[in-house]
Length: 202
Image 1: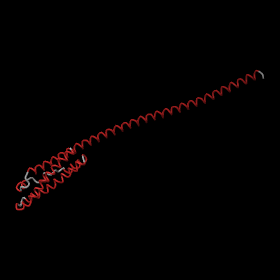
Image 2 (image 1 turned 45 degrees about the vertical axis):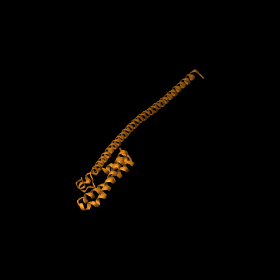
Image 3 (image 1 turned 120 degrees about the vertical axis):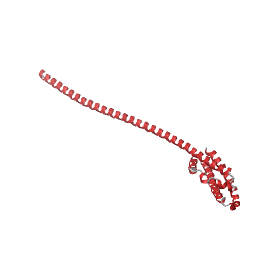
Image 4 (image 1 turned 180 degrees about the horizontal axis):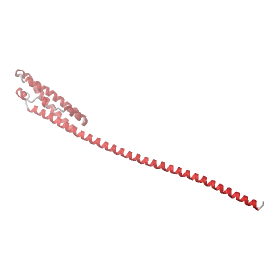
């Protein structure tokens, strides 16, 4: 093979090699560009996921804080209600004891005394039902005793009102003496029950 042919083949090989190199370079550029885009996409998604996780953590923290504050507020309200309930129970029992003491200090076996006594509706505690509701939350056993005490007191009220009616008819009074004495005993029983209920509830 003559030198000119060799030179031509050499130039062709170099040109082919250069072309192959160019093609490979282009392919590498395309692959590198795709890799860069893919990496950037992964990085973006990772950043989004991190931000979402941070937001989620912040929301969870805020929710936990709100729940804690809600529990604290509920506990405070329960404690305040319990305190108010005890105040109502105490004031109602004190009112009942005052009424019973008033009747015990007066001789209800004396028709003249009974005629001048204050009406029972002004002495029976108006918040008796409310006091029983609160008492049931404080101490069920105490509430049972308090309920029994109020029942005794209602019976005493009915008895005293009957005695007040009989007291307007002096001729009927001798037959009412026994009932008056029984009412006096019932008043003392109710007083004992109120004292016991107070010790259980307060």
